[in-house]
Image (cartoon, rainbow, N blue to C red):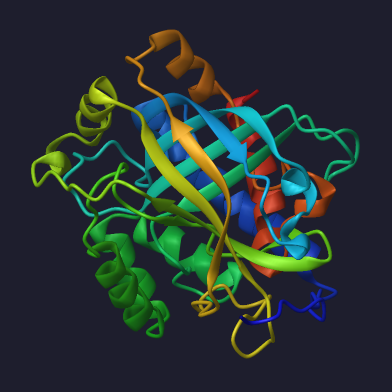
Length: 318
């Protein structure tokens, strides 16, 4: 068993605040353009696939070092789940995409990451273990460039040739097979605090029966399964051990440390609920909506704090 380390460190540069503000402005500009085309919505993950009620259960047999924050004592929490496609427009489900699995856990207490009281804990996950870029600056350039028209992308590459291999690598990553929200694993791709430790989060699907027709309609696949019974996932964490294997500030590196299950997420049998879907669509899911013991870590997460707040304000989210 690898021993988790508390020797992690964040490296904050003097110009970060200004850079993150400019990056947030670029995402808001993109959000405004897409909202003009497709109606009000998020800067990314606009397309809500399903909105679900869930329950998070923390077991009683966690090792002592894993009994941190939300996982300190055995308990059961109500939760919301928002499943999404990551594209900026409403493309068909079969189009390759980054898929999101966001969880809002209710009933928490204690200090919040941004001050005040933590009344809920958000987990914002995608179906990739890492991001395509190590820093928020590269990620912002890549995403905002890829979201343009073909002509705009070509002109951007002509101005900055180094973009081409990054765009090609990101395009290849998008084509990673996706089996569906019931059978796919999801990841935080960037670290959060875990009491005195640092971890990345993984949601491991327990279902393994893949429906080859699911890509035609991800929502139909989820709700067909829920008509038969609940969906189960293991909520797992990977602990920081050292900067080489588990870097805090580089979101493009896959952590290779073992996963420890710290909770079970259960999505019970349920039918589509339009009122719930509307409420979840209007809500925000933000990694900075967190207990102080689970505050986001690293430069990409610090950039997300500014970008998510700007996007939320731009669409007047709850």
